[in-house]
Image 1 (cartoon, rainbow, N blue to C red):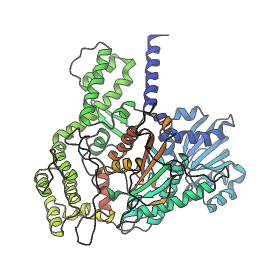
Image 2: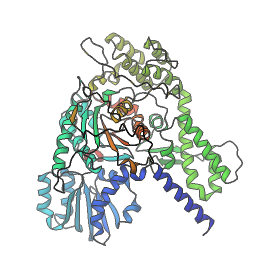
Image 3: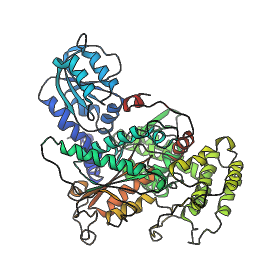
Image 4: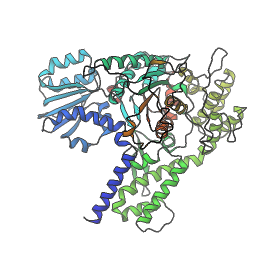
Length: 611
């Protein structure tokens, strides 16, 4: 064996070990890919012939999220096509269709076979239940061409190992806009998607929701999910009625914690998505030679997985250490590491090119984040943390939040940053007076865009304090012993919820049961809290329990991080978090502002994805 082959083999083995260590082989993406293999791919294997895979926009995202083209090639799928685009007929080949059960998808499928068949035969799979009218229409025109027709129950996207979305940012406006005409329909769709998540995980959870005197969406969604789960498991393929599993599903609304998605976060992933223009998880940057580069921030990048939940100070330190290690390994002089120095290293070390490229991406990204931090964010963070936590670094209570806010308003920060600070001020007081709000809006110079602040009322968040409006702040866990950084003292409320749920401490008056989970359910268990566990991989954790959390109206990256932190700390309970979509402070503010706009068109999943 040559040295080159040996080095490559060692790197590959290390990569696989790292992947196992992070649990990615057992994460949501892996579970979804396994389910796709057990249904669609298993049917394909019965025939040796190569096949074509035809996808709509949603199912394209689904496949992209959990497998590569090479995975499909190894299963004898040679071409992937877009259902909506005109395609050349390949009459000698069989086609697999994976699509959402909508009229648009079914019409596109029928068009492929109605007059002159484009393919030898069709294997049809729907992401969810296909309505009878669509199914009958398909049967009418294409029955003799269809070899298989199944519903696979996967209508959510596995975003990360422990994070899922319903791929529906428009749900925010449908649910919270006073002009919405399709709120109930949107909640029904989200409920269907949540049922497919439970089905994919093979869970039949007890359902609970956060009670809110001002909002009914969580209660409504909990009722829908519970009813649909009951129907789904009554119609189980095995003919047996499934009993409840060791899982709990908690449903709550975005308004339960308006602070976390607005604060400037200093952990790597949350900070990067807040400050840098990252679209579709793609980070674009310029290399030292001026060429445009881009990198995908996903779980294929093991360095990203390792660093994403760390504080930016730790990330900067880690990156420099890793780069120095490469220099040392190749007997490079151990000097100051720069991006131009790294590009020289890459030319000299072809074997390490991929490894160095990964580190170059994160060196660029951390530098970008730190530039923003040193320029503006650092000064903002102290005021934001004091307003959010309600006390300063020394634990002294903030008696006059206006004194904390004023320096932010007087400094030439961006309008968006000032809006965020004003919101934190209002949240800290559970609302302010009309007169005070008008002064703040004038000060920030957003008289024509006051919706950024006022529309939070649509989420049940008090903006104007009135004697009749009762809003009780949740009791927070004391985390003073956990505080490591003065500018990162705030902990998302969802983490308290996760820990309380795992320890069976959720108050049933605040978290009513829509349906009970097994009496034995205890996320951490009185035993597990005291016992030493032999292993903490997700595979072992499957024998424990699962806590699934769904937030109506979007989740922030800091809340996603909490799911991993609690899972890591508890070990016997896996926490999975999801929402209609993932929000950044900017995207959430724009969504809030847009709630005032008039009635909108309604979109189905595939149309929305194609928009």
